Image 1: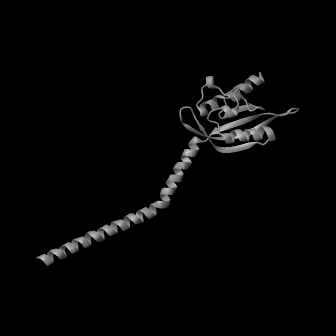
Image 2: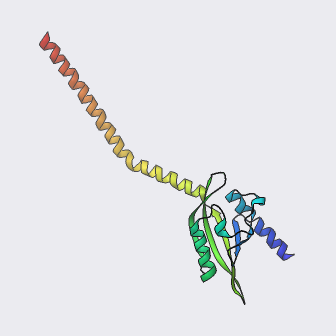
Image 3: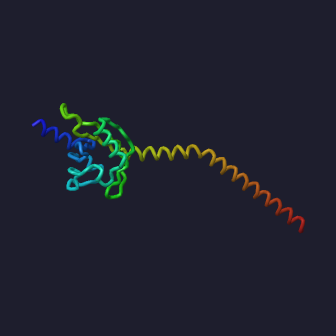
Length: 168
């Protein structure tokens, strides 16, 4: 009964959960992971080697290999996953080895967090900050240009009047 409740908890978790065995084959994925990656339940990654799944970055496969071989946990940001529909999904992924008391590392657990919205907000802020940096220079350039145009317009008027006076 506790195992069934644990399965329900994992399946309904608000973060993506992925388990790979010692050979890097996916043995569990939850609903949130499928939502983030745009996969349907019938397209499950279960039973597939991690490095053969379309859209998985090589860097993630390397981190999982280090996790399984050396027992090193990781917490990395900015993984890009391109969904089947072409949408980009940016992920922060935390990985940790799963250790058996007698057999050592038997697999790895990955928790995936969708950081796409945060990344988009940060990019918008960078653009706004850039505008804030260049706005004074643009305003000064516009005022200078306006002054230059006013001077040239007045000079042209004066030259024109002078030329008419000379003719007349």
